[in-house]
Image (cartoon, rainbow, N blue to C red; front, side, top):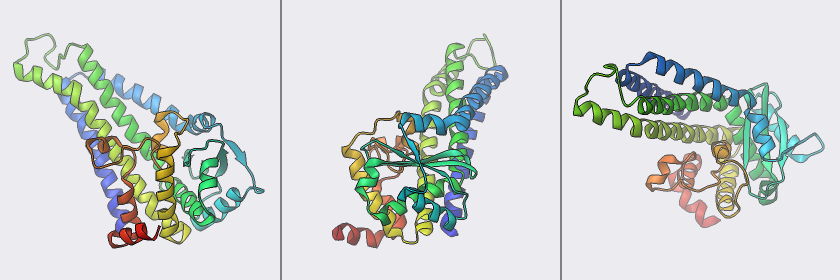
Length: 293
């Protein structure tokens, strides 16, 4: 319960940070019309994705629904019962890259999808760990949280564009501005969207930690998911995923590996593998786990 509370609290703080950037941008711009337009466009765009995103994701992955005759369906059904969730629709994508994702509007309108590459790579226990992780995303309503974060980030990006194309004029309209106001305008245009993206990615990483923890509880053994994450992490870095880059955040492992200790890690949708393993099995166990592999 403690880890779950901390993860949720961090998510709330990050969402608050996005809201704070919007308020700061609005205060600097002083234009209610521009802010209203930005909010409207962002909500319309991202919530259209929220309602139709699952269909688009499945289409882009060329996924086909499977039924009770497929072992992945039966496994997911057992895990959904353990998680006290309605049974989601189960899909398999023909992609050779090992990965999986969950999508949908809520507990009663959700899907899970695994690639053929994942089914070939993992044993049954490891696959159960992955599917439990995806069910955890559904249980935590992470699709909704991601949509809210994307909406706020989009608002900030649109504000930057509005501010840029209005010539950087703020609440003083066409009045002469001081050099400090000009510097503020440049910072607003350049840094606010970047800050929004960084916070949005941080929210995505935080939800991955939470889904890992909950997924380990659902499948009954954190080592199942830990072994799967290690295999998928290395497999995804070798076999490219044929899907839009916008789907990276949905996957259990980021197809393009940016999640290192470098600056690029700020823009990663997933935490580094080592930190995910530490979250699952503890810092002392990670070394022994690696040696045992």
